[in-house]
Structures are given as structure tokens and as C-alpha cells.
Image (cartoon, rainbow, N blue to C red):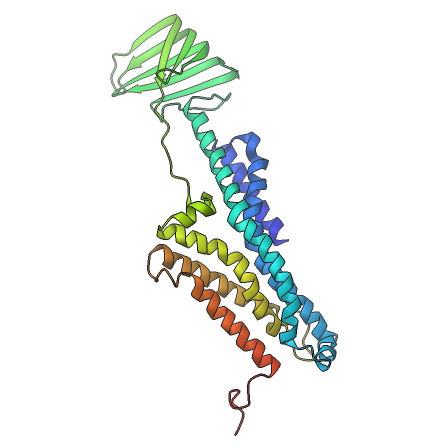
Length: 340
């Protein structure tokens, strides 16, 4: 259900990007499919954690845990099958986090870059204002058929002067040698002058060429989330190290959460199945927030490189191990505060 909610919200954002020409309209579902991999990586640990808690809570409610304990299968022994399942899930999640999700992020960025390049070379859409040269020229066409345009409006700024052209039709011709696009217009008028002054020139024409110089596309550095595992391992940048540890945190958190889930699922005799669920969700929220804080600290070089984000997993793992041993009765009465 949470996955459906998140994907619905993401679908709305993708539609907004498509409406503003940040991605092609034909790539909406491709971007949605690629984005779903990121959410799977995020939701898998909490889904696994809550699944263990609900399953063990059911066994507790039906007194099956008492029977298992009388047969010598306590909380510690339950970790063996849970850890086996966690191992296979962690292997799948590691592949998603380290390989598949970065590739998906890279494909999304490539789709967005392609959309920006298409806008830059002057791809026209009917009824849409387009600026092929980053704001100097604005073009509007009521109808577009390939490179043919009809009912055309063009505004071009040349210093203080403004040129406005209205034409019945035109066509776009691109010169790949000098990165120039020429709009050849037919049967129209050209208005030229400085806004606020009276001396405007009005020229009627049957054929008029309007060159538009397209700047070279700006090379943008890809986000660190799109970098491959090999690129992250070869980089000593703090942001790259934080990204690598963040990706490894997803599969590692499965083992930490499985340790915490076993003692948290133990309920009192008259408690319901969902009595400890709120506590489990709170623990996960604290865990996730601590990971985000630790990631920011690594990016800002506020912690040593060897410490990184690992201290969060260690603290939560030790907490879960302590609860598990306490639940199993491994601590003596002295440590539990019992009277001597």
C-alpha cells in the first residue's frame, strides 16, 4: 500500500515534468518504471522488519512461542531461519542498490538531458511558446507539421531593440555546421524598434529568413546517485563515499532490523497482535533519521573516514542484541537490577 501511495505521488511529479517539457511525454511511463526501483530499495527493509514483527506477534498471541521455548527454541534460535531469509533478501537488495538503481537513475538523467537538448535545438510543439536560444528568441506556432509551421509569431531581442514577426507560415532549416537554425517565413510583417519609442519600422514581406544561433549545450555533471559502483570505489570524494555507504546501508539494515524485530515482537499475554507495531515503526524512523544525519556528516567531512555511517548500524545492532539477550534470559539478576 505504501508503495502504491509513493508511486502515485511520483506519477503526479512526472506528469508535471512532462507538462513543463523537462521530460518527453512519451517517456512518462519509462521514467515511472525506473523510479519504482528506487522505492523498492527504500521500502524493502521496513517491509521485512514489519513482516517479522507481525509474524512473531501472531505466534506470541497463539501461545506458539511458549511451546517452542519449552522445546528449546528461544529468541536466539529464531535468528537462524530469519538470518537465512535476510541473507537472500540482502543479496537481492544489494544488487538493486549497487547496480540496478544507479543504472535507472542514470537513464532518467539521460532522458532529462535529451529533453533539454531537444528544446535547445528548437523542437516546436503546436500552441507552445519555445525559446531555442535560452530566451533571446521566442517562437510560437499554432500548427506544426514536421518542420513546417503555420500562423507563426516570433519575438527576438537584439540589445535594446525588439523584433516581432507575424507570418502565415514558415519552415525550419537547421545548419549542423555552424549550429544555426534558420526559420524561413512567408507572407507576413516584421515590426522592429525600441520599446517606449515611437520610431518603429514595419516591413511587409513574402519571404523572410530569421537566423537563430543555438548555443552549445552546457555539460552538466551527473548526480552522484547515477555513478556506478566502480566509479564510487575509485573516488575519494566525501560525497562519493557517503553515497557508497548509503547504498550498502540498505542490505545491511536487513540484518540489524531482524535482530531488533525478534525482541520487539514479544508481547504480554493480553496484548493484541499490533501492540508493539507502533514501537517498531518508531524504532525504524529513528534508525532511518540517524542514517540520514550520518550521511550528511560524511558529506561534510565531520566524521573520520573509517567511522562513516557504520556507527549507526553498530549502535542499533548492539541495542537489538542487548534486547534479544535480555529476552532470552542471558543476563544475570545483577545486571537486571534484581536485589542481591
